[in-house]
Length: 495
Image (cartoon, rainbow, N blue to C red; front, side, top):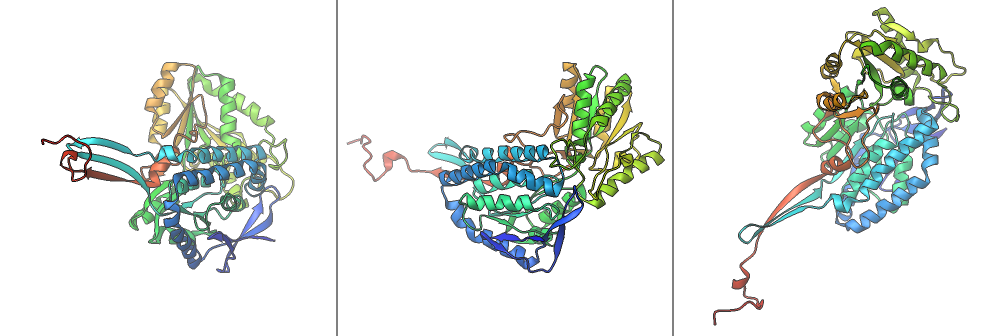
């Protein structure tokens, strides 16, 4: 049984807590590894290593930090397939999805490679007579990232590159469900030449999370996960004086207007709802079908679902893999029966699809005539379940989005430019797609929702990420009038 331990100060540290978590291959249902869960003293050791490395790292030239980041980028590019295979073996998503995740992470490394430009300050000469005012951005110190199971490569790469490029040192606490890819990423930081202690890894559960949130030497924490835990992280961390960005859950709506291209909208709905088995915070979980578009759209979605190949993520024929754990698979399956009891129409029941072996597979589900009081609408399911809410008008569809407690992402499908332009203003969400179902920003913009999808006021990665991991210092300078200087500067005198 392979064991995954911590990496602290550039060295593998064998977990001493006596607690471990089983790691499974979701396609087979078999345990393949175990991961050590950190005790408080192991978290303290990681923070101490990061603190000890901080002064030397922040004093290193931007040119040197940039060169190391380029080397790290090149190593990740070279290791893409290795990382994707590890990812699929522990998360279950198909290999092409895993490879795409790695590539989106690389975008964020490349953004961090331009840190010299992102850290430029500003200067006003002669703000007042003889006075110059300069603003510079300085790192915070030791910062931490707490990342979820659903994107074990991409989300650590949302955080660590910007954080360390800006001069901070970093402690990563990844999900204990699929820990191998985060571990490999930290190894690649060290292979690239980053000094010991700049990037550290502690595996763990609530014990590790709570210690990072309370530790006096941790200045900031980035988190991605469910809304209840995001709220807990935000409230606990800020009560201990930390800067916190905590991204929570979502219930993303895709509005389809009567003039939409049905084939385009159906393709988008299937890929956005069932890709990565729906285990994405930007997955489409509700289609708001406006007017007479509902019936032909449902028919088109159902037709595509029938052709969807579900299987082991390493099988090139597979288009959707298993869910991450048996418990999560069973929880998601329960929403189909709940919707039926509450009066919805089950167009496709994923529970009726049979699979060989003990993997954590579940078929895709499509539920029609969903209302806002049903469990399948109110809860974040995080699985391959798509709900259809029939709306009489554009206004009613937009109100659904506004009334929902989450505001992560949303999309509209229409041929009408005026309607699209109005939607991007009306939609009460942080990220909006126009004929794009999953509007995840590219690496040089920033990712963040509204309402209960984001706790804190600074979004993730991109320009907002640099702002989160730095703080401004304003320097006001007055120099004597050169004409009165005691140094001979060659100015004319009155003699």
